[in-house]
Each structure stands twice: as structure tokens, then as C-alpha cells.
Image 1 (cartoon, one colour):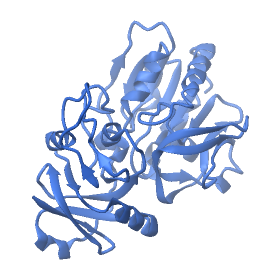
Image 2 (tube, one colour):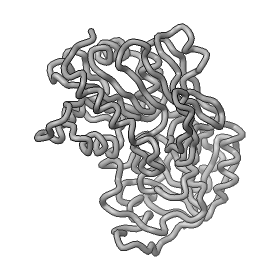
Image 3 (cartoon, helix red, strand yellow):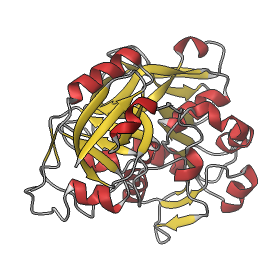
Length: 358
């Protein structure tokens, strides 16, 4: 079946449709990873987005039941160059097109993904329509994607690792990846996952040893109404944040955030630890970033910097055990160079225990 990708720039791409047969719209982004398409398509941080895979062949090792990062993928569509319908891997259970159809995700193959990527790099904020109806090509009106966190966060408290002997961590869910939860469980933690709009009193009733702010989709400033409660929470317990969680910690203390020209999405982003001078390869997925010049009058110190564009990759509070990184230490998919940061956080929670900093 023929399908069409219509961009807000006026560009139109024709290809072969796969997955769910229904029109969809969303922000068009690109991911530069050579592998990890299953983890990417199931990452909740892609909510409302149409993912362009820059690697030419996608689907060649299939999809398994183990490597999903969420129960249900939140992305809108998948855009690929060459789609493999006959994967070869001993753990493969499904093809990419079968999974896309199961979860209601539209897809288009056989298009020039390099050209799509070039358009996004040139124009920055690009929106698209995926349709099988050629008559709709000329009538597409782009609509920005807003308020996506409530759709990917849990709505009730969930508990994991009840028998664990390590610290008890509250994971605030803005669209967390399963690998983050697994990293904490592998570190011996008991984990309680709570909704994005949790209050300080609700967290205090759980009596955790530490708090973790997860990744998530969208503009961090859309969470502004909840920053007052969040500030009370992070100042009461040792706290670590990743991606959106990092941006929220920065906003709490007076920093500003802005949209990147075309985002960081891939598994080969070099980041420098400013404390040691060591450079790590990292996995990233974000369209917004903390403005470095807004850090100067805050209690936060810059700890990590992006080698390519010098953007802020990590901050740490000058006095309280609160810190965060923009990249993904759990790194699924991607290099695990910075996995030791989970160990550092868990050890911090073990030392601090239930001590309150409020």
C-alpha cells in the first residue's frame, strides 16, 4: 500500500505503508543509532513524535519480548529507509511491522531518510502527517504536540523489589524507561513508582531513602505548575534526575531551558565530566536543554558538558545531595559508559538513609 509523509515545510515523501493503517500526525525527529530500534520505539520520551531512523536497514534482527522500554509504545509513527520483513535472530518473536500494527503505530518505508533528516536539521521544529489518502497531502495543517507527560505517566503507585535489602527509592514517573527501574533493582533497591503530579506529603508517607526523577517527553516548562511540590520533595531526600528530570531540577532552582535546533537522539554523543576531564560516550533523547548562562545565579554547578555543541549535560547542587544528567546512564540502547552513576546515587542513599534535608 502506498503512503505519504507530508511535512510542515511543504515537502512530501511517498513510500510503502506498514503497521497500523490510519492517519497520524506528530513532530518529526531523527535517531542516529545503528541498533536499538526496539528500545527507541518503546521509549515513552518519544510520545507524540514520528521517529526517522537514519540507519538505512531497520528490522533485521526482529523484535523480542524482553527489550521493550514500556508496556505500550507512545510514538506516533516510524519512518525507515529499508524495512526488513524477514529478520534473523534467535530471540526474534515478531517483525517490526507486526509490532507497529499491534500497537497502532503507522509506518512508512522506502523513503529517503537522509533527506528527511536534512530537512529537520535545517528547519528544526518540523511536523508531519502520515496518510494513505493522496488528497490530504495539500490540506495538512501542522499542530504542535503539547501536554504529553500525563499520557505516559502511571496513574497509581506501583511497587517493585519489596524484598530488597537496599535503599527504598521513589521513582517519579514522567515517562520512565524500564531500564531505569531495572538499574535501580539491580543495585539492590526497593522501588516505588509514583505519578508525575505526586505531592510532598504523599512521598513523605512512603518514607523513601532517595528520590529519582525520570526521563519523559515534551517541553519541561509544561510541568511548571508542579515545581513547588517537587522542590519540597527533592530538598527532603537525596535526588538524582535523568533527561526531563534533569531539566526539572534545573528549573526548580531558577535556570532556564530552551529548545535545541534539532535535538540529541542517538547512542554516540560524547560528554565530558568536568570534574575529572574524562569523556564518555552516551545515549541521548531530548529536544530541550538547560541554558548554561542561566546557571550563574543559582545554587547549581555544571558537571557535564556536551563535547559537540557544549550544551549542559549535568548539574549538581552546591550544598544538597541533588544532581542530574541530561544523558541516559541506563543506556538501552547505547553505550553503558556512565552506568556507574546509578551506583553513586545508590551509595549516596545508603549513607543518608531517611535523613531529611527540609
